[in-house]
Length: 372
Image 1 (spheres, rainbow, N blue to C red):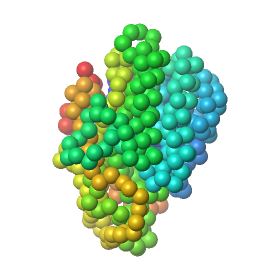
Image 2: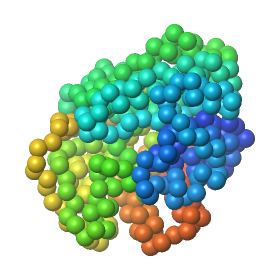
Image 3: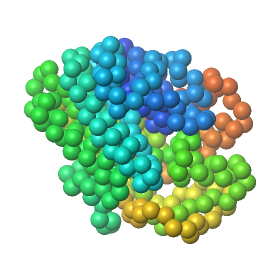
Image 4: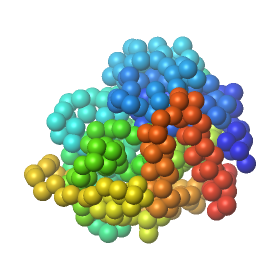
C-alpha cells in the first residue's frame, strides 16, 4: 500500500476544505491530502511562526491558499460555497493553554464561535458530505484520575482554552442532532469530532510548546527549561491523529452518518510519559542538550491526562503505529535535516518520506485503516 492508495483512494480527485492549514497539524495533513490526490483548499491566517512547515515545504504552491479568520463568518461561508467541497476538516483554533489565560476572549471567539461559523457555512453549502471537527483531549472535565477518558465522559475544562474545547464539543453535538441528521440516512452531513493527545513531530515552531522549546534551546546551546516535569500527557507523533482524522473522514464518506460521534486518538496506555521523560528522550536522541527546571510561578496546567482509544481501535480499525521512542527519533531526525539546510523541495520530500515510512510501519502492524 502506498500513500496514494491508502484509505481506498477515497480522497483521490475529491475537494477537501481545510481550516487551519498553515499551522503545524494543518501543514502535515495538507501534504498528506495532496499526495492522496485530493484538491485541497486551505482557509487560515498566515503561518503563525517563522519558520513554518507550510512555507518550508512550499505547500502554498500545491494547494489553494486562502487567508481568512474563522471569526469572519461571511468570508468563511463565501469561501466554502465558492470551493463547494465534499470534505471539511476543521483544524483552525487558538491552540495554546497559556495564551488562553492571556487572551480568553480571543480563545473563546476562535474556538467556539469559529466552530459555529463553520457549521453555519456548511449548512449553506449543499456539496458538503463529511465534516471532521478537530478539538482536543483537554475537552474533558479532567479530575486527574489514573484512567483514560472515554468519549462519553463529561466535557469540561479548568482553563479558558480547555473549556473552549469542551464547548466546541457541545456545539458539535447540538449541530449534529439539530441540523445534521445523525440517523444514518442518505443525503445528510456526517459530522464527527476528533480529540487527540499531545502531538510531536518535525516542523513545529509554536511558542510555549514542549518540543519546539526544546529544539530552540538545544540549537542555541541553552538549557531546556521545563515547568512541570512530572506532568503526564498522551504524547504521540503528529501522523497518528492525522491518520485517525483521515480514517474517520473516509469511513464517514463511505457509510454516511454511521461514524457521526466523538473519537479519541492517542497512544497505547504504556506510552503515556511525563514531560521530563519526553525531554530526556529528545536530548538523548539529539546527542546534546541539558534539562533545567523552571521553578517560577505559572498558571494552572493539568498534571495528569490520559485517553482511552479503544473505541477507535474497535470501530475504526485504527491504532498507533509508532511508539514514543519512534516518534522522538522521527522528530529529532526531521529537525536535524532541516537545520542542515534543505531546499523547499527537499523539505517536502523528506516530510513525505515520514508519511510513507509511517504507512509502511502501520501495515507491518496490520493496520489498514479499513474500518468495519
